[in-house]
Length: 224
Image 1: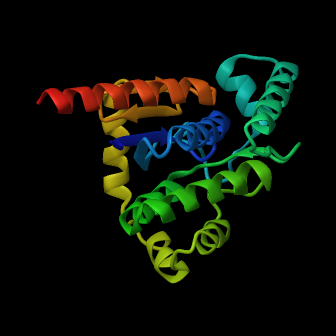
Image 2: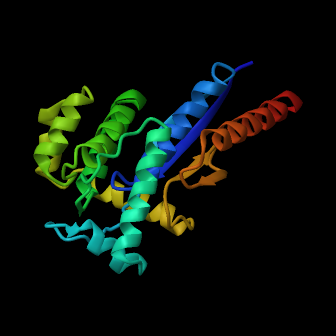
């Protein structure tokens, strides 16, 4: 019997551990298929909701926010780059030069969710690539529209959304829902609305959790 799980992937497109976590989760899902399948949805979280439109130098931002030295920030970036390479995600060396506001990206991801699971996932992955691999600005509307097009979505519809405040309220509501639930760091992977896995975990951790949760759900169904 195939078990179907619901997975909410709470994350930001400017979060490097979210890119790593997503790659690991996809690996885990491939390992457990076809016995376990999942409905995967991406939920909004802003690491820097007050970020100014002009953004901020990445090293300056990290040293100020986390109280680390510039050398520590560079060392951490190299460790992240290597971890990404191990899971098949490319962090372009020296590309992530600035931190930007990501709210418009989240508005488009909410719209993409309404269009279907596959296009939302495609847009999410394209936005992560745009920022971390290509060094592009995820608040720039031209960058966002290229990502939309690459994901197979309608760029004209996306442009209309960006030119308005459409989906702003519902995106803010979802962000508050998760922060009110106690989520203050990402990625946060929520399975069946009750099981939380935090951080960019290895695929083995996700695989074990998926099998255990699917097994428990099937046992409950069998008893019922």
